[in-house]
Amino acid sequence: MGTDCNARFIVKKGMTARKAVGTVDTSEFAIAFFGSLGFIISLGWEAVNWLWVIALIIGGVVAAPIAAWLVRMLPAQLMGVLVGGFIILINVRTLLATWIPIEAHIYIYTGIVIIWLSGILLTINKMSNARKHDHIEHRQNVS
Image (cartoon, rainbow, N blue to C red; front, side, top):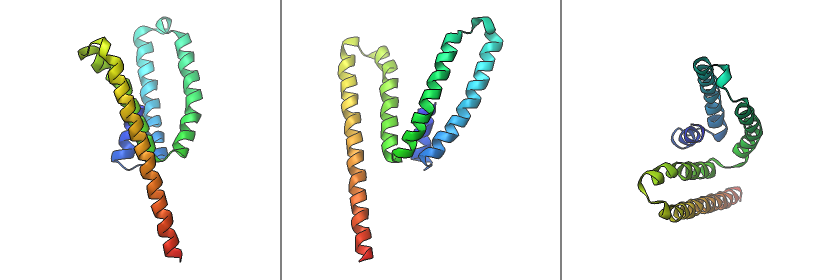
């Protein structure tokens, strides 16, 4: 849910990356809490594998500051391309497993990665050109 909603908020709603991540994280907490409560009520405490619970908590604690730092450092356009490509890369597995012979998977994954990297480079180039244009325009206005 997180990466999909973050990208949607940033691209469609025009939210800043910080606000999108904060909004989604807050909603994810409520969903995770009540989802966990439902599992515990229906399965009972005995069925909970506490090793997995601890691993997920540690992973969240480690990932949260890294995500906060990335959101602050990366421009929203670049983050949208990174997150969008990651979503496609992860979810294409389901489509491939359903319709495409396993021998072709490596070629399809390679093609997706090449297109994704091209999109990342194109976005970086576009942002760099826009920054140069803004710098030149600012110098002309100052003169």
